[in-house]
Length: 331
Image (cartoon, rainbow, N blue to C red; front, side):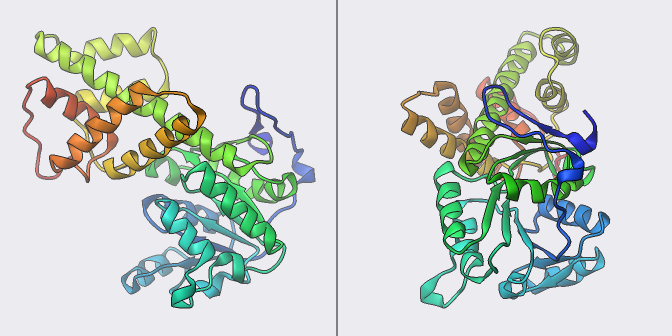
């Protein structure tokens, strides 16, 4: 499938095939909220695609850096209220709710009350299904669109426009956002009109990766304790029965003891807790995810909060009695 037709359905979920000629491109200003490692890379790609991007930041020390990238930084959220689309890439539910709903006691007006009718909030954060539904309803109350479009991929993938995007929302609003999403990722999966479904898919997908990392860490620890060099073992497994991206990428990282920050442990724990909450609502136990939750809590307690989730391999090794000398600057 070509880049211009990178709209797919996930098995069993509704999707729409939209021809490139039928897309409504975003021609006005784009607002961006959430300029962390992922957000900066994504906003820079929107600039490269020819968009004018107004970036909301909360710290004055970020202004010069963002300006040098071609963004138009502001510390006033209301500067985004005239934008046609506002993208959010924030760390958790509370941050997204604050940006959208504001805080009455502080007199802070959020995006819902401030955006013009017909504008779209493109929420690319990993948040709960319940929050996605609440925000969609709030934007609809003000005559605005809401599209959930969480992504699979790390900051390096964001820089290279190699993210996988899962999008859901009213079909007209999703269609308007598709050219933007093409500027941010390699493929977009459109999974229907309910924004909460996109966030549920993202959470469940992250649990599949997290449990994969846990198992990789466990088997590498066994190999090491039995005197078996783990690299050939991982090479065999990823060349035969386990050739997926997660096994290849993170198997190599765990073998190399590479824990450089990408998806840091507290954010992984946040997603694990959200996924377990979704499972509890559904009445569907996820015992393997409970194991990962406990490992993450252990790792954070040991001072590994700034490490990537590949550090699940480190935690598994330590639980097996192995000791690693980590460099001061983890690579």
